[in-house]
Amino acid sequence: MGRLSTHVLDTALGKPAAGVKIRLYRVSGDTHEKIAEVVTNSDGRTDAPLLAGDALQAGTYELLFFAGDYLRATGQASGDVLFLNEIPIRFGVPDAAQHYHVPLLISPFAYSTYRGS
Image (cartoon, rainbow, N blue to C red; front, side, top):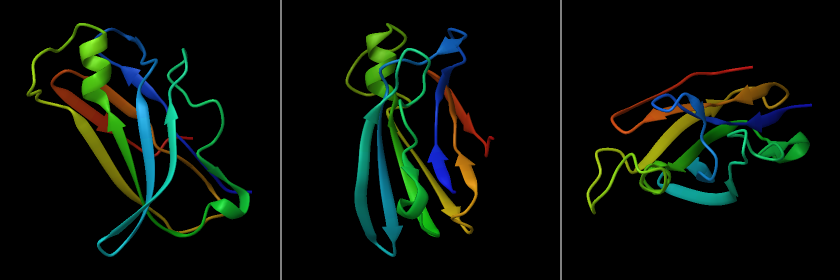
């Protein structure tokens, strides 16, 4: 059974990023369909997979991480204009029977992602 999961790690503080709001969209051409909105728990993870089973379909998705709110809340950033604020990660799901884990590693001035397990 396929599933989609994520987590957020704060590389500047060296710990999971709790309280990060994340939106998940299904993307088709210029259309973004919002499918889920979650907040990371104390372990920087969501309490359940973002999608699982028949809900995960082959196609293009986008995770939007509200990093700026988190960075302000932890005192790592301030002001109206931040270097990193909303971080979109667009990715493809070619085989909906697999597990896709899309983590985000953040700091106030950098981020990275990869396909995890």
